Image (cartoon, rainbow, N blue to C red; front, side):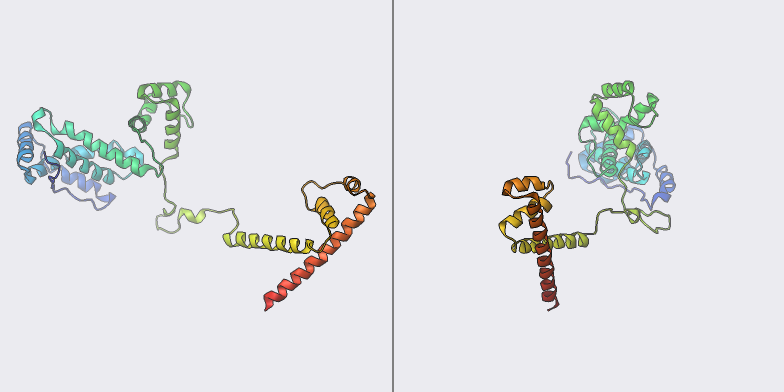
Length: 301
């Protein structure tokens, strides 16, 4: 059958979650087809691309889509959206259906319907990719049921017996079961723009507190540090080599040298080293004050 054939169908539209009951009432009006009616309609669509035949095939199975959607209500997504995705899967199933194989459309289409819903759930449930392999998808959609069967209702990680049983039955590793269980326990992603109250006032992001300093403060601090280092380097230029070295080793290092160590290096007394240090520090302070004053005067102009 050609892939380009359209499957037009007069499907009742949703007007929001509140219209779900009305939608379910509407689709009950479409008759269930008898096997021979379904076969003839499928042949007409397969051989002639009859849009009316395709429409009857689709509308007669809308109840099947709704029933399957109800089984996926535990993933926090609106049933109306699940049904809409399932209807797309149903249309794909009608396109691919071959009546000559001897089975009913419902048996074949339910796989397309479930696949469409599951892909939608996986896309919507988390921004981080989850269930990227067939085994992981099987784990995602069967973990809750298996936990219920094993009565594994406790919070946190599964016990070893439950973990081993689930991993063995689903053909995945115990680590994959543990990781999936933790992801599902946290729930799906939630937007920070979701209103906190029914009247729409206030969003979750309004309560987030950033402990980091403001960006302009960070930039200002960095500029001030750079200025201080430049002033220090300029002020140090007024000291001789011995003053620079002693001052640096005594006050500008994480592990200062003792007076004794420097006195042995320069072959002078410890008192003499102390005097050089004090004099050098005094000269440095005066030079820093002078440089700072000069820069303020320049800034004023």
